[in-house]
Image (cartoon, rainbow, N blue to C red; front, side, top):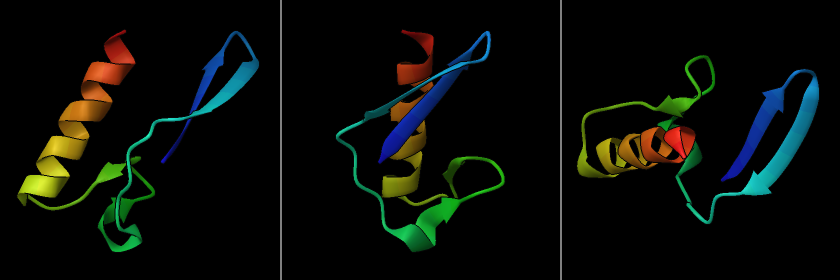
Length: 52
C-alpha cells in the first residue's frame, strides 16, 4: 500500500509495507471497508501511522 501525505502543498509518497486486497479498499474514505479482521487491523494500522 502506498501512502501520500500533503503538508502545505508539499506531497510525499512512501510504501507502508502493508498489503490489502483491492476489493476491500474504499477509494472515497481511503480506508478498508467491512468489519472483518483484515479490514479492522488495516484501519487500525492506518490510524496509528497517521498519528506518528
